[in-house]
Length: 145
Image (cartoon, rainbow, N blue to C red; front, side, top):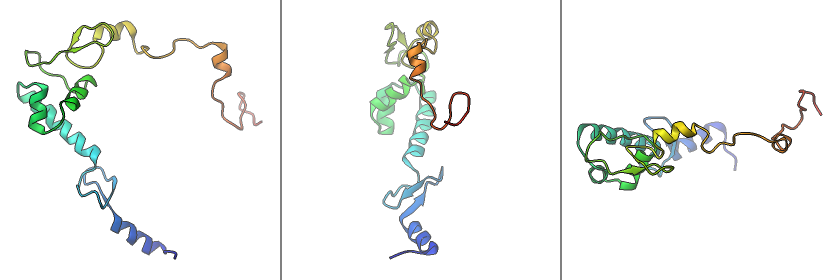
């Protein structure tokens, strides 16, 4: 059985709907109006505002919003959330030197010392250049093979 364009569009519209915020296509089985990404972004914005307005710890935030503490800590380690300076901060330690930091996973000193090249390869050998990715159909001079 084949469907013409009009029937296909009608069938598609019956099985999907769009996220009200970003327009992503969602399966009809998914009942929420917002896609998971938009829900997470909105939750993050609410959490950030809540932290700014209140003196709270990660556990308080998690309980208030009904989310795992690990999610709040992940946002802190990613540097997306930074607590006000004070006693309510559960310490995070730099992964390189172990110094206590407020957010992220590497302290500013280690970031400066190591630059953006912490995990990047610094130099290339002739073997690396020879084994570099090539595009089929063109030589290095731009000529076709």
